[in-house]
Length: 447
Image: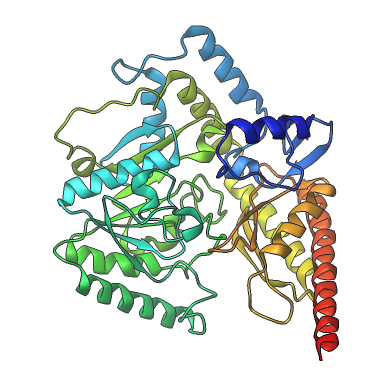
């Protein structure tokens, strides 16, 4: 069945839509932290539809809210008052930490970041944007133009002039060997230097507190607070891209920016993914003067629709009432410990990193610091065979395993997933060792 569907997929969909696995799978249903494919195989889901299934698959509260709202009205648009939209906006505004906030709903994180760029460039009357190296912000024409990861930026054409600064990747690059304090100091100096090369005023810095597609990398706590001091001197806005880090996923904080809170909240915050638990919700929170700077009419046909807002409200209520942020901190800490123990002694693993239930495992060629996409693919396949779904990412080479299960993950499920992953990592290590031996033999034969 999956083979036949794959053939149909290739016949009508673009080549650049990526599919996982040598034999792609069709997921048909889910419950809790598990999903099933069309062949009846059951998997523990450690990727949640790219960090989107935030609470649980088929969460009863969300299913009930969607069903009840669908029975009333599915759609009306922002041209009419929408009670669920107002109620969710009130909740998000209160949680954002931004002073005098206004909320605009979109259908995706890409559209949310696109809106944030529109606001910032209009407010500052500049098309210059600061972005982080190794970043990812979406797939629209404007957001690929600020994405600092060539694997996800298919064109150099852009309506924006983008200036890239250091700081998003702690363990690689020219500042990797510095202490955290020295790293922050060097990155601030780099920011100052970049601003010295800009023409006129820069509109905004957009940054993910933890880079998602880039491989779950993050700077030392406090970097963006130090950046903010520089930005404020120049009147430059700070946009925190919380599409993947929001809603308590990192455990220690509800928003990623709160690890850098010494200089206050961002001017603009974007969100998406987890708030809808699979429904298409994105959005922007900004100070009123920034949000209201547009001088033309604007609407969103599908952003803030009654049915998605009902789902978001139910999902957010469940998250808060069950302290899933605390669960992410506790179970995420357990999972991190188990994964680091599993990786000990395996030189195919360079680093296990992350926060809460946002964990990355970077894979390399044994005996080197060279990223190994082949090892990452091997682990992905072996984990699937063992009944575990993972994600991939990381810089320009997809050599990082991305682990981001629903925030309701239990300790027993964390243990189970870690055991499957440990076996998959050992498989990748054996394959890498075998490849090295084959290369050595080939070298000796050539001599």
